[in-house]
Length: 355
Image (cartoon, rainbow, N blue to C red; front, side, top):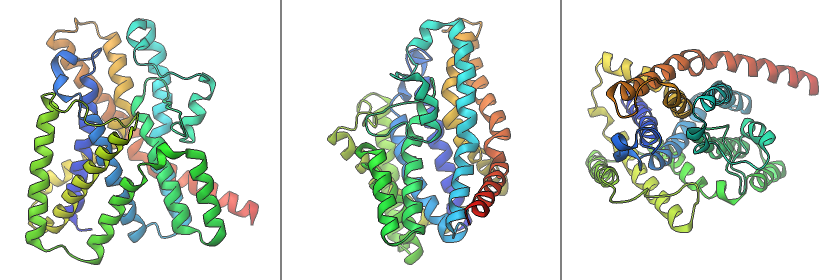
């Protein structure tokens, strides 16, 4: 994957995280009256993440993570460097914020019949298995990790095991996670397939330009329709009725065409060094923005000393949340090398123990 394509993908994934952030600003108890145009942007952005995830994993196993040990250590470091802080952060902010404004938190708190199991399920990413829909407190975006992390596991088992043991463990994981998580596996695999296609053959420039321009026009039209309430929420990843899943697949195909088109014409992209560095820096906080923003928004919404319909409240809420996210990214997401080193040592100890 060349530099131009890589930077473009970084821009897309940060934009997708920002779309989720804006969709939560639009919630009725936060800034609905001011940001309502963005309320439908969140779920399509998650479909973008799933396709991008498949693409990125295909690239990493093609270029860097060529063994089961390096693959699973890298995935664990990437996820836990943000997931564990997110659970801790949400627990602390929910406890403080709910003491200021219990009514606000009653609308956002996750519903769990067995609260003691909430965080353990989230730590092993079984929070969406079968009919579960569990998040750590008010951190609603955490739900998607119950999908994506299981795709990492399934892909790793398929890639690095063989024979009957591979079939056994794949079947076991599928049985544990259930059909709802498995229903979107093809969307993740679509991203993987797109990357492999670009590796095996180059799409002609003219066709790529048509794919890129056409998909961009459709995406812009859909975004405009969503912003003005013409398509409702477009899909429902939480309910996953058959029609909703079909819409998710169509969105994934549209974005896949966009990725293939972008890769085909990437040589025409010109990223000045300052712009490229800025995009890379922003992309380095994408996961943090996605996973930290909602509990921070709710905490600030409950505790800021300004009337909700004032610019002081809006600017403090948005600016405070973004500042907090970027500061947290510096000590969590951007420090995943520490987690990787820790998981590497743990893997070494286990290997010596059971060898």
